Image (cartoon, rainbow, N blue to C red; front, side, top):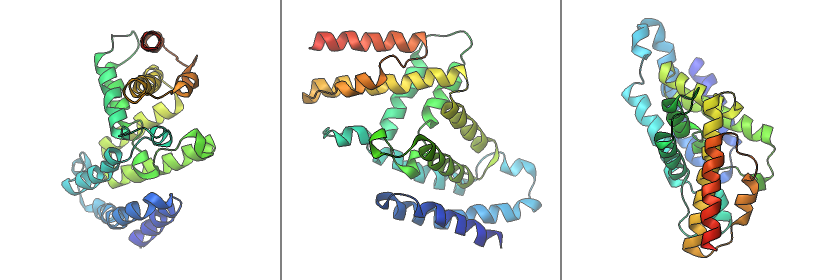
Length: 237
């Protein structure tokens, strides 16, 4: 009975997704949801230690879904006809590098920033890269992404790994910690650095991306790196 209910919930969730991605994800979760529910029904006979880490099956299902982060191009660049635009995973990877090389800041856990950078856009594996130009209200965007995150954590089998991903994502979404503020700045930094590179490589004018981030950096580190990028852009002109 629990399997049937869970599958129905999952199916309805995916029917809300854009046509371009819904069939793909429905196919994955239709089988994966069954597996998650089966694990839940068997949990009463398992020791608590068995859920400490994802099972091989849950881990591979989760990682296979995350492949979408590698294959989905960032929508802002696609809409501006950038050739060979970066993927969502490309974006998150360089943010992870930013957190890795950033100078130590009092009250900021660098390792946590690295993890947060890796997962901050993870829900886009299901909902895609929703941009302001799509006309979707912020609250609705957040709802869709939160629902997707919950599905991914269930697919991972729950437990401490899934809980850590969930907590990191929520901190970022709510901008509730020093680490979240740093990573929010990295998100903008990565975008304008990529814009600078596309301007140079493809002779594009991407001023709107610089304007959209102006005055919105929350940390001294973010402001310093943004200033350096702006300086290089002036020299490039």
